[in-house]
Image (cartoon, rainbow, N blue to C red; front, top):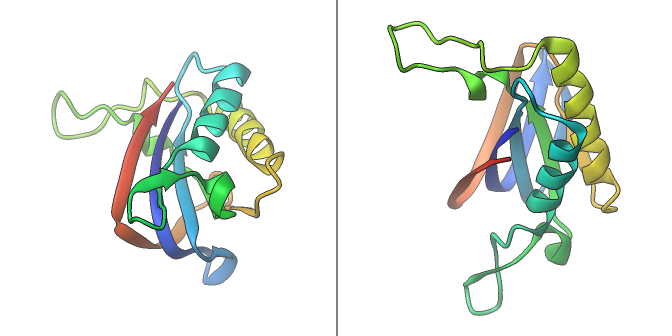
Length: 145
């Protein structure tokens, strides 16, 4: 699994002009599921995201996790994170998991996040979404399992 994690002041997602989710201060997690990923990857990556210390403490250092600051979370499925652009001009997606496998593991990832008790919003799997991200910092990290 691969995640692009961004610390945000706020974020939201719309589908067909309808706002389906929005969050305040927290994290946007763009999640890609790769061929060969498993349930254990979903759980361990969720745990990593929840405990990643990317929020500033009183001294302005990134020392606090989403759990410690009570952050909102917005998880968006994004298969293009597994797009391979090494050859030619058109990305290859052979490293991405098949849609049904990816959706199941995405749902497991979201379920693991929700067990934290934090507010967790989502996009809509497989939909064409308009994602609005107000990256704070900017702070962006790429995580792989």
